[in-house]
Image: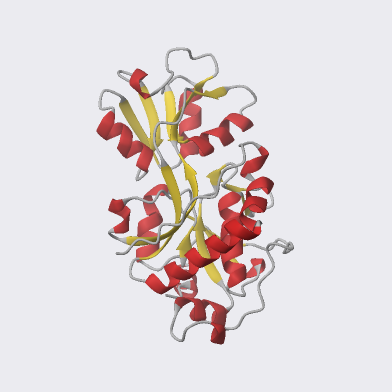
Amino acid sequence: MFTKTKVAALGAAAAIALTACASDDGEAAEVEAGDFPEGSTMAALAEAGEITIGTKFDQPLFGLLAPSGDPEGFDVEIGKIIAGELGISEDNITWTETVSANREPFIEDGSVDIVVATYTINDERKEVVSFAGPYYNAGQALMVMADNEDITGPDDLAGKAVCSVEGSTPAANIAENYPDAELSLFAAYTDCLEPLRNGQVDAVTTDNVILAGYVDESEGEFKIAGDQFTEEPYGIGLAHDDDEFRSWINDVLEEIFEDGRWLEAWNETAGTVLPEPTAPTVDRYEN
């Protein structure tokens, strides 16, 4: 499924073209459409020489809109690598802001070709989209003000106001497993930061790696409360029935786990704050 023309027709205001200079690990491979199976998504994208990737613009370390106007982070670097393996250079990637609530709709309606956006693989989502990966294993955690000693884990959330994001796995987990918490939902995690500062909410919950980025940027305002309490495998979202494209992306992921590009991308982004991870095992599930 090649969707670039659909994005242009929609005139998506959130889409921006990445114009940064290509680095050694971000250069496009020397491939042509004929190198891929005829009629495949890979061939269509390679022939077009451009790709639209959904990512987040508000997630430090993974997908954050920089002052330059370009997104940066680990998810962004993974997207660049996939594009490069299709022969698509960085300046021919269109990045579309993709928040938790619109990841599946954007894939389903063709607004994006793939989504790389701290996107947890789960069975409910697999009913409408496909996932390659995982390419990273995160876990849900809690963030509180630095002087908060009342919350040390999810069992302390009864009667507490907790902020998260619509359509997210962490929000669903709190609603289902910690119903005594008072859950407030916003469109983006950055919308939770000011309510935390002013006491409207007691905690923010999402994946530990996302919260670590906010703590790092907060100059001592925030802290992580306790340990992570779920497993959140991050995958690359794509059209539900495109098994050929999914298999190809999985091949790319396994290759970069082995050749060092995955770890290099980590160390240049999230690895500036977070410890070095172990490469996950790709899940080649059947629909």
